[in-house]
Amino acid sequence: MSEFVVKAAVKDALSEKNVAGDFYEALDEEVEELLEEAAARAEANGRKTVQPRDL
Image (cartoon, rainbow, N blue to C red; front, side):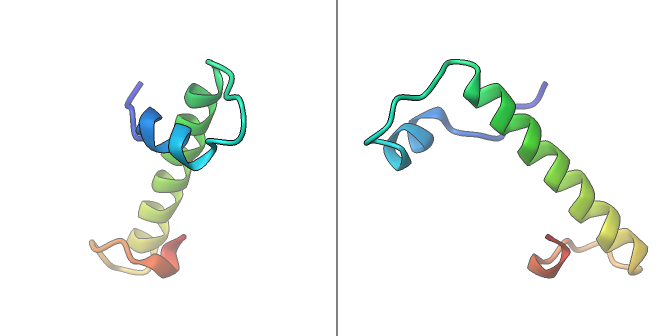
């Protein structure tokens, strides 16, 4: 599994909350899926460059 999420950044963003240990893995999976979908949309539109609108 790739690691896209920086745990320290998540901890900083959620400093007022407790974060479960398995939250990071679930978040990483969501990010990976989002990236795959954005890449597929760019390709479907004939582009090699993934742009914000692909999200």
